[in-house]
Amino acid sequence: MKISNRVASYLLLTFYCCSIILRYPLINGPHDSDSFFVQWMSLKINDYGEILWILNLRSYFGMYPFSYPMAVPSILSILSQVLNVNPEFSIMLFCFILGILGINSIFIMAKEFGSNFLAIITTLCFSTSFYFLNYTYWTIAARGTFLVLTPILTFLIIKLVKFNYRYFFMFILMYFSLISIHRSHFYCDWVWFQQR
Image (cartoon, rainbow, N blue to C red; front, top):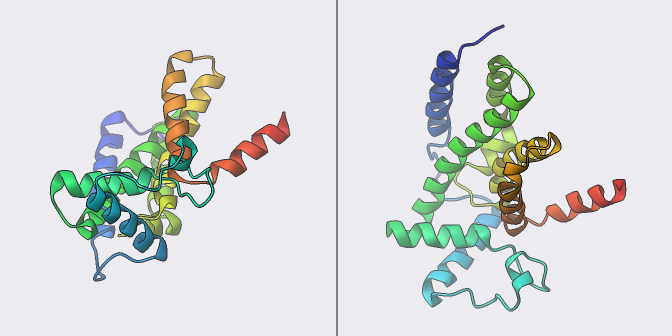
């Protein structure tokens, strides 16, 4: 089935609206234990004006003893300070942004594999999947951000495999961003080195 670019654009706008509707909060506050921990860390960053538990460069990536990847708490702290809102509202706003960014990232990655029809079907399946909705519904768990940005990394890897090296800097930036978001990159690195 062939879908024109104009119809694909309208369908993406529909997915954006559905994403915002699905993320409209029906509960009183953030859920998930990770949310409370990350929210506490961002509040401490706001209180002290710095990240006191960064002892080493590896601490920012969660590679130092008793450390945690700091990208998501830092983003939450920045968002609450710039918008001058409480952290709970910034978590909700961040989840809306993640929902729209997730739709865009999976569409771009799926478009690399085929037509607009494949990209729309993949986007529909991804944007309504349980894990995507659960990790981006008023929670600040790092898994949601990692899940949203992984298709972009996959797209960049595909571009590099096709010897399109102008995406190399973006690949490095995205890779280090994902390292600072979640520790699951350790497993991905281990699998990659085992295959070599």
